[in-house]
Image (cartoon, rainbow, N blue to C red):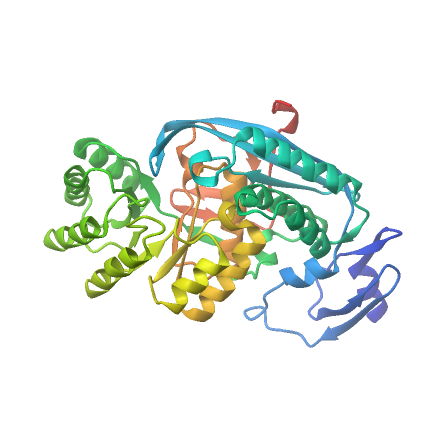
Length: 430
């Protein structure tokens, strides 16, 4: 039995190392004690009840799986939007990102997406393509190494914070390729807590009548949580919120001010919500990202009303998270993979969980490559209270083949290996 398990679990990938291939039908887990180019030491753990089994461990795979990249490339990914999206003071009418494709020596392919939103990410499309090409050239030249080692090298090439969206796209593609190699879906790789998520959806800045009609359409499609962008025109926003609430009294609200309010305006907004009987699930980024004092003032008032305040733009690094925790500034943080990279996001998730912070996961302007990866991660770790991965629903077309299944607000991540989706690569421009 032991020899059959060993032969099933290990397949040679090259003279430099071994790829892990876990048998589907074994009731015992194989714990890897060490792995080298020609020697592997394993020990079988006792059977674990399926309800308690976390399936595969991401860190274990990263430390033991040897990556040999044969091909790597980034190409422009341009998709129109059904209606403009607003990010702070900017308006987005077309999604212009970079698609990443990594192919390993075993033939397995991984996909990633680099978010390009200059007003938010500080990276232009030209810079993103250039840096992606630089990393791809490096990956093709790099001799086989563990995934963790490759991550360290990529971080060294893309260490400045402004390169985090590029690092995120590369990390996504590498992780997806490895998950394909070991025949496991990403949500299991990240913990396997659940295979479904329920997302909210964003209502853009509209007139009260238009907002009410669109909100009713979304609610009829099964969306119960509406995220509204505020922070521009106090009176108009309150009017739109009241119109939506009158038309759909059972829906829940999330409000995102995108740094648009002063502390006094944000507090006034909260008081007005109280007057009209609306208690949102969360009030996101009410003031400027660097106004920590104002953020604390708004949080103190919001807590009296039972409303958690979340940060997005104010949380850009692990240092920011530590400050937020140490000073008890807010109750929630918004995790966006383009802000931190995949590895950075996992580190922040771990710290936030230990501190009791509420976790949100959100998308910027991505196709189902980016939101699919984020969704797999959120489903796998199972600790996100608020989820808004709706951008693909707002695109004029869907370039992704396969991937997660969307039924209204519910996303289902099946057992297809990796994230399960891909692009028709040859149809993308060079």
